[in-house]
Length: 340
Image (cartoon, rainbow, N blue to C red):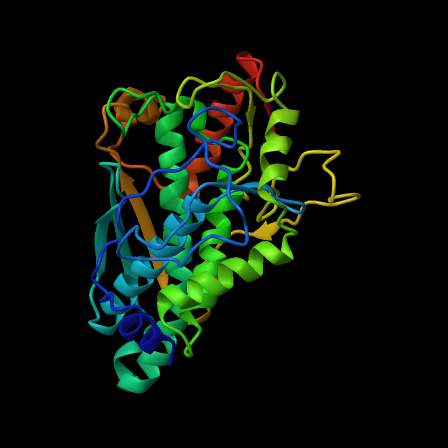
């Protein structure tokens, strides 16, 4: 059963929250670490001792931030567990905070009419499928919201500006890849969670055509002056962004760099974003509301609710993300940024 892998592997209990991690920029600047893809270490939900984190380059997905992959994977695992616990207790919903942000996420469920007539085993089987769908969806949504916050000026590391990292060209696909890898790991009954994530990560990178460490740095240097300028992390002028979160076609298409040795004729691999079809298939309905609590909340809520008399204190991603992204794209265009 899927949930046995979630609860009893890796030495982590379902209630454990993922630890805080901070990502890298895909730029060849001081402070960025490029990785040897054959030496990424062992994934660790609970500590930093065994992991190697930084940037790699792949033929089919361009630069990938391994930390973002790990973040999305661990939050998928955590939110899968929280969802399943909620469903098996017949609770109306649950709330959580995504570190390091201050926003609150509120999830509410409407159960199928026959839910109370099902046996515990029947509920468990349905909850397994529904919870992984929710875990992937919530994780990808929360990390996307973090990108939105940083675009509007949010800083989670002291006074260091994070605006350059908002929707940088590798972010969205790295985040999505993490949810995909977590799904594989949670279905792996032969290995602990940490081992399963390590295996799935290496498999996915191989499928994407991961390249040596020197290629990752060379690819970044190839777009210096076009996609970015600067020599120091946090002091980068990031001119290339990728705002694709699947709103148009349901897929995220990564940004690749032309003319990379070893990647001749490579085409980007577009991956589907998490969906909640399985919930509807079983008769569930779900509502997700984000309650922003950061200083930047008023800027965002003004975009979502232009009429001050009708302004609310929450954002519904399924309704409001499209409008927010359109606003962000307009600002990016005004700044002369290149984006997709």
